[in-house]
Structure formats: C-alpha cells, structure tokens
Image (tube, rainbow, N blue to C red; front, side, top):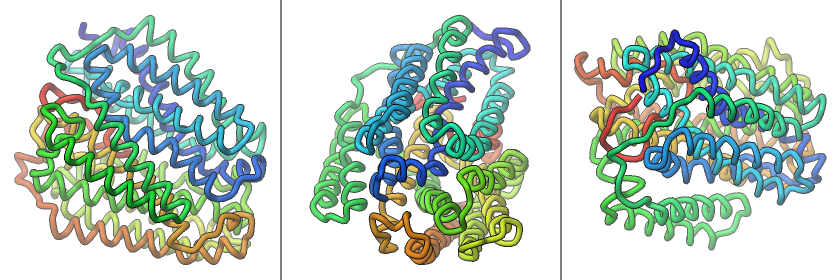
Length: 484
C-alpha cells in the first residue's frame, strides 16, 4: 500500500512516527539537565547519575540493530508499537523509582523499548509512502523530530524546576497513549519479504555484555570487569566473523570510506556525550543556574542544527565530506574550550552563549555531511545496515565517554555536590573532550576522501542530509533492499 503525503492518512502516519521517535529524542536530551535534582532527591552519588544516562544508552546501542531486524521480519508497525508500549512502561517505572538502583534498571528497560521503536519509525515511512513522496515525508519526520530534540532541554529544565524530575519520564506515558491508537488505526503494516535467517541474539547479548562490563569498570574504577569486557568483546568479533547472518557484518568495514567516517563518528560523539553531560552539571552546580536555565542555555546548538543542517548537507554534497568533517570537529573543539570561561556567576551572554554558538556551528558543519557520507560509502542495498552501525557507534561512544571522563578527570563520587570540586575537575575534563574532537578532525583529514561529484549525488544522501543526529535506521536487518 503506497500512501500519498497529501492525504489524511499520510499525515496520520507522519504523526504516529514522530510521536514514537520523538519520545526517544526527548529522552536523550531532557535527562541531563535533571541530573542534579535526581541526585539530591534520591541521595545518589555521581556513579548513579552516570548510570542514569548510560543504562539507557547501553541497551539502546546494543540492541538497535536487532530491533530493526525484528521489524523487517515480524512487521514494522508491530515492533514499533511494542517498542512504544515498552518505552512507556520503562518511563513509568523511572518516574516512580524509589531509589537509584530502580531508576537505573528502569532506564535500561527504556533503552530496550527505544531499540525497538527507533528503527521502526523511519522504516514505516519507507514502507508506507509512495516513492515520489518518501523524501518529503522523511524531511518532515526529521524536521519535527529535530524540534523535539531542540525543546528537550527546555522542557526537562522546566519540569525539574516545577512539577519535579519524575515528570521528565512520566511525560512519555501520555505521548505513548496518543501514539498507539493513531498507529493502530492509520499506519499500514509492512515487512521485508526477503528477511530470512536466524536472529543474531548471541551477538546482541555479547555486544551488550562487553559494553556493560567496560562501562562498569570505568564508572567504578575497577580493572577486572574491564578486562573481562575486552575478552567478551573479542569473542563478539569472533562470533560475528563466523556467523552467516551476523548482526554486525564485519565485511562492511573493508570499505575504507565507511570505516574512516565511523572512526570520526566515534571521536565526535564521544566528545559530545561527555561535553553535554558535564556542561549540564557545570551550569547548575558551579554557575548556579536553575534546571530551566541550564536547559535553555543548551538550546542554541539544536536551534542552529534545525536552521542550517539542510544547507550544510547541500554544501557537503557540493564540496565533498573531507573539509566539513575536518573543520566541523575543530569548531566544536573551539566551542568546547570556550566553556572553560563558565564558572561561578558566569554571564550567559558573555560566557555561555559564545561557547554554545561555536559548538552549534561546528555540529552544523559536520553532522549532516557525516550522515550523508556514511550512506554514500556503501551501495544502496547496504544503506540501512550502514546507518544502523553508525547510529550504534555514536551511542556507544557517548556511553563510554560519560563513563570514562569523570574517572580520567579525578571526579569523586560526591563531586557534583561541591561547586569548587566539580569546577576544578570540569576544567580538567573539558580539554579532554576538545582533544578527542581534534583527533576526529585529524582522522577525517587523513582518511576521508572526496568522491567524484557523480558519487556524491547518492539518493540516500539527499534524503537524509538534514537529519540532525547520527542517521536513524531506515533498515537495519540485512544488506539488501531499499533504504529510506
């Protein structure tokens, strides 16, 4: 069934997918600004705050490829709706959590729901709309999703200061209650008739275990779990190499451009993850901002992304990816270092805004060309798995950065309760983020090539170049079949 975007059903399909993916996007941006309130209310140390962020990212990064495969096999609408309901239940448990342990466990459940609904939202558009309308539908979906990401810090701060941090999570429940009936009534079911073979459950479990053990070792500053995690990771690679239908087809990394761009992704999204985690705390703990003030302070980056990402994608298509992927991280590194001016009594206009504006310009410069280059690095039939791998790499990088930076900066478990202690360790951590960004720029300049103009007209690039995040997965199950 091919739906036209101009029809009433077409608008309902876009609404359902935006509501679903919007929950996950909101959740990725609203939580950081609520962390100090969560810590005070639950009497939690810094490790619990790290796990509040990372438990969600861990299960999401580890299972997102499997979630796309389930949708292709059993029906994208079915798995999307399962993810929406699962995410809502996890959100409800987060909102009712009596202590840090329950909150972390509920966040992990949320991540599972996110892994089920995230790839399905864009795949439903691909499977539902007429080919002539797919690009416009994806553009509308990504634009509205970008609005959700943009207002996330503001909403999170307002809720944390007003009704309380629990409403940061409880907000997802009415959104899910609206999404489910709309999807059931108006979104047609679709699946990939060619989806076959066994699911790589072992690969998903090993990947999650490796990430989880390494993350635990970094947060708790213990060696043995990290060593076990590395061994599990090596076993994961061995399993994926030998499986006929792996979750992570290692052969795709034989493509030099694809591997190069994913190395850049690891660097820049590790820096982004650590930067936004630390800045949300610095603005409140040291600069004395309210949660709402801190959330509002972060808005310039997402506003710039919304306004300029499409133009950045067009520029990247004209001049090739090498320059944007080199200049973008350098601009972000400059914005990161400007945050060192933010201390006690910092002025928003004089100290915070310049840093966030430069950071936003850097993100605008690099994110859209990065998205397009990942898709252009592979043939059309592998675009879905390529975007899925890149998305998972970005999330895993942020996960490990949030775990590692406090350890590397010498941040104690109670550091966020002391403005002096946190400010001192913040000044040590921020240059590390900038250094990782510079490393990403060096990798891009040394390894990313500028393809001929004919190759840069890849249809997936034109559709997705305006997406303001690592590419959400139009298809992540297999290596053949069309991508959005």
